Image (tube, rainbow, N blue to C red; front, top):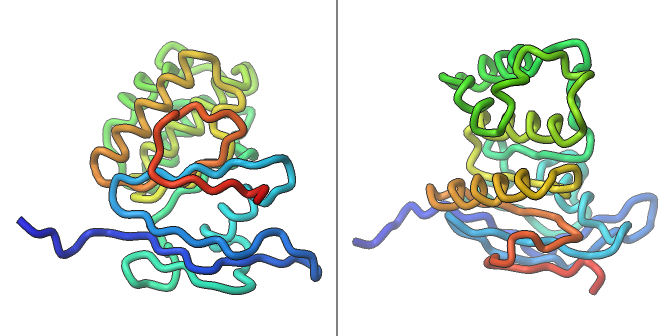
Length: 200
């Protein structure tokens, strides 16, 4: 059977300049359903900016971004960045209840269990460790049901078990046709479909 409606993310000759300074240029890649793109490079090489450009948060200077022939990712992505945006006085239960209502996701308590926060769901977030807050941010990623994940250093606060969990979740996302673009100093995935070294 020939699949004719394969979803694709096409990035061509992408460049970003800020205040006349080049952040990056000549970035091109094509990803299809189930693909992972790894961004590597030193601090300041443009990894975070590239993810923000893909998300439409930073303007494109040159080049194009197309998803299924549309000139943007529109509402098909979720970006997980350094700033988790977690309110200290709410509980993980309250936080994910809110985001589940936004994304119309059912059974969000199962997601809290999956990310290891079942026993902490009624504890105010200010008492969570940074790794637990990262797990809560990942739970938002899951309830979003978005087809493209833009992950900026997603293992920065995770322990070994948390990293294993995230790898499993990325694998499941890809298995069901999701696309992931991930920046990381530490190649925790080992396996990916496209690699961009932002230092080059």
